[in-house]
Image: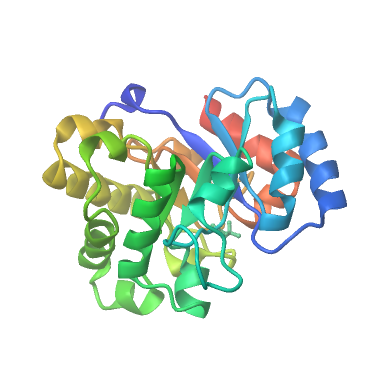
Length: 255
Ligand code: PEP
């Protein structure tokens, strides 16, 4: 697979971390550190910090993302945020289908698909998360499961709209555990996802698709992971909260 046909993107998923004051400090620390990055740089911050992050990153190479959005445009959905509300704030990306949303908040492949369609319609760039549980890997069904998650999430997405989608392969057993998939395991599943894209669309779409790895990626293991032919950057949780670590991962993806 030709990596020059697509952009590597390093996206930080801050999860439920950082107040607005802390967001200001971290983003201000990051701006000079990552200004020469030769890959996409995104920070996905809590809803309450989006406005701060968007204002601070204006005119820089750092893009801002949210960590979820609802699939309806408006209505009686207490506590939810629509895709258009995010766009109005200047947000460009949105993480969808993260395993923590699937695990703790009842997210399913079907609701991920609905959110993805709504996000694309509003003009957001979704970072779609897929990945197996440890039990699935042990049962030898990783490839089928990830292929199915990808197919359902992309139902109804045109080839044109697909250009705005990033997929993050995140084995659930590697998220926040310090247990990273080996570079070979990460590459293998990213390649399976690329094969699914080729079948659903065509080889041009598959070659152009940014497919990240996520799961305990850090300053030390990033270089080997992002060097894999089918791994186009990463979705980073814990290590995105420390500017020097996030910079080291961005440097690894810029090589
Ligand atoms: C994530 O939250 O998407 C993630 C990959 O977390 P961590 O890097 O902490 O494993």
